[in-house]
Amino acid sequence: MASPSGLIPGLIEPVPLQKLVIQKGPLASIHLDVLRLDLVHPLVSGNKWYKLKYNLDDCHKRGFQTVISFGGAWSNHLHALAAACQVVGVESVGVIRGQKPDVLSPSLKDMQAMGMRLHFVTREAYRRRYDTEFHGELIVALGCDSAVTRIIPEGGSNASAMQGCAEILSLHSIQPVDYDRIATACGTGATLAGLILGAEGKGRFLGVPVLKGGDFLVQDIRKRLMDFGCDYQNWQLRTEFHCGGYARQTDELQQFIRRFYEDTGVPLDRVYTGKLFFALEQLVENGDILPDSRILAIHTGGLQGNRLLVES
Ligand SMILES: Cc1ncc(COP(=O)(O)O)c(C=O)c1O
View 1: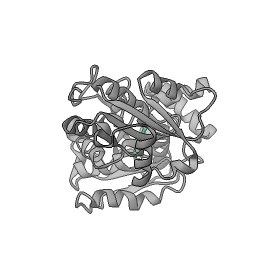
View 2: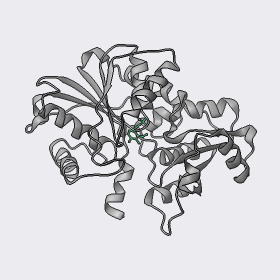
View 3: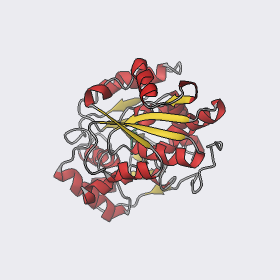
């Protein structure tokens, strides 16, 4: 197995920090920069590279031969994991929530084509994804050797992922204090927690959970930071921009994503980044973000999921 850091062919680092010039609408009144992590790599894209980097390094150092992780049929995380594992020469297994569909989603087809073994489990079984006993059962059922198998949680969200995300700003020579807010979409909150950790108490961070009822993330993010001995308070979540829940969308969101692309040329995905930029527009419109504010939005990728709009 090759050492992963820096050895994924086609990896672009640093990515562009794009200053958007928006002529009309609420976002025209602020200074909006976008860190285009979606351009890091065609397959190991967005925050995924940063979340996987040290997980893969760890596999390399400790001689793991198999990685098992968890996700849904459209998982950006499993998609990126399959691609990265193929390159570094480690076997990957995706434990997929729900019955095997008659026709695989484009994301699942890609994962399989990149050598990932797909293991479908019932939704009930999937609820045990953080349970170490379940991990043991999976290792046996999959015929893996527990001594050389690494379990990576859903979304890749562990301490190694935070370590990778903590480097995002410094790798791009970004000073947190140069912005009034640094904003990112949240699923598990590990990316936001990593960014906050890396900024060492400087700057102000805004997380936009894409799930309904995202308030639970406040505790989760606090705990993630506390695990690193940090109690930073320079962040907040705005939980009202889920547009109906995870992977749900409204006509307004769809129209926004289309309009944003026409105005800026920046493609957004409908599950994560679409909701982030939509939230920013709403927050400017309702006065929570003031005119002339300097905002940095992290484009965390996820564009592979957009094929569902066309193909499903
Ligand atoms: C494109 C994209 N953006 C943002 C996130 C949210 O990341 P996190 O789970 O670390 O909050 C994810 C999920 O990992 C994602 O796939």
